[in-house]
Amino acid sequence: MRPPIIRAPGHGKALQAALSTGILQASGKISSSDFVRWTSTECARVFDIYPRKGAILVGSDADIIVLNPDSSFKISSATHHSQSDTNVYEGRKGKGKIEVTIAGGKIVWENEELKVVPGSGKS
Figure (tube, rainbow, N blue to C red):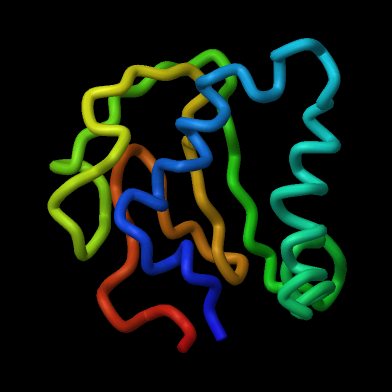
C-alpha cells in the first residue's frame, strides 16, 4: 500500500517547503541527521518497508535526493509533476532546493527536468 501523501496534491514540493521554513534550523533542536532519520528511515519502518526503503545499504533501492541548502526556488503548479493543477505552496519562495533525485539507482530528476516517462515507476 502506498502512503496517502503520495496521492496528495503538491506532495512533490512538501520537503522543499518544510526545509525552507527553517524546520532544521529552528531552535537548533533538530539536526540534519535526525531530520533524515525521521522523514526517511522511521517512515520506512512504520510502513514496514525498511531496509528496502529508508536506508543506504547494499540491497536497498537506492532512492536518494541531493539537496543544495544554498539554492533557492519558487513553487508553482506549472512546474510540479502532479495530477492536480493546484499547489498549496503556490508562489512560495524558499531556500534548500532538491537538485537531483535518484530512484532505484537511476537519476529521475536533474536540471529541473523529470527524466522518466509515465508508467516507469513500480506499482
